[in-house]
Length: 333
Ligand SMILES: Nc1ncnc2c1ncn2[C@@H]1O[C@H](COP(=O)(O)OP(=O)(O)OP(=O)(O)O)[C@@H](O)[C@H]1O
Ligand SMILES: Nc1nc(=O)c2ncn([C@H]3C[C@H](O)[C@@H](CO)O3)c2[nH]1
Image 1 (tube, rainbow, N blue to C red):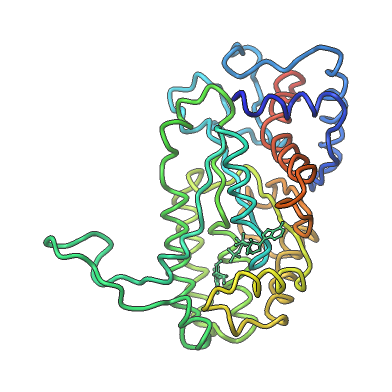
Image 2 (image 1 turned 90 degrees about the horizontal axis):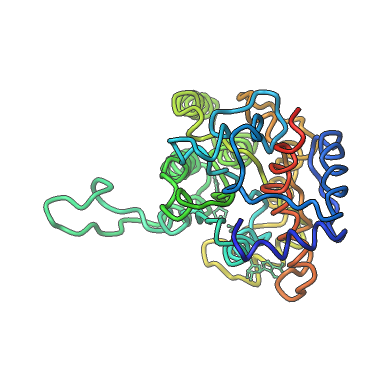
């Protein structure tokens, strides 16, 4: 555990642990008790001090199918030790802002930003420079999608999802691989929100037609199945706020492509998030994804200006990503 995270653990163990909204609350309650009972000086050992006999189930999700990624900290493939979590939420709810906060709070957390600038700057030619000639920007696909959604939504979803696959397939940076703590790679959105939030919404709005939707789903499923554990997530942080709050922040941010975005669009996206992450009524096609725990955070809270809220949020994420792992080790199922 990095030194930066230790004070958070102390505050957790001293009873200031905030309420945690994991979807499988019964499992959370089970974990909650032993963690509280450890406050009498029974501290959690940093991963580097653990022995392999202590870690039969390093499964923070509590799912019964423990994944090889969690086998042990001495696994030759240290890449498998790095947990992968995505931050999901409506447009302008504050994901990037929150992600930066996480990054600065703990050196074991690495944030991978959503590749928006790639969507705003579609380059000519292949993805690599060819024959020494620099690539030039040919278009702003984000702008095109907002201006003419019926024409450009399918193209946009193809490109956004491809860029998200690239992002999720990148190996973790060396400092996470070499970390003696519990390294976490945090993605801003994922290949799953691409499909179950945005592409689905565009289909329901009639901006993606039946054929395009069938084609999108076909290649999306193929890629998820082919890449398997490489694109799995161990957790989702859902930064949740009302569409009105998101609209307020969207206006405040003033990104030029989003000038025409209406409240109705944010309301529709809000409903998609709720169906997927809260009500669990969205049709999900990947078994592992159905069981991924979701941590809900109140996105309308002023974590930028209020240090107490900031501390609470970091504690909640830390607990969901790291502390529950230690409890699993001490009290294997
Ligand atoms: N907790 C907060 N309190 C007040 N303002 C905030 C808060 N979080 C974010 N903001 C502001 O809201 C705007 C949008 O935030 P941000 O860019 O982080 O959103 P986002 O969710 O990453 O957006 P996108 O969906 O476009 O990726 C920014 O101007 C940011 O400064
Ligand atoms: N149509 C569509 N599909 C996506 O997968 C997607 N992901 C993000 N966005 C939009 C939201 C912000 O304006 C901006 C930055 O998040 O890009 C998307 N729009």
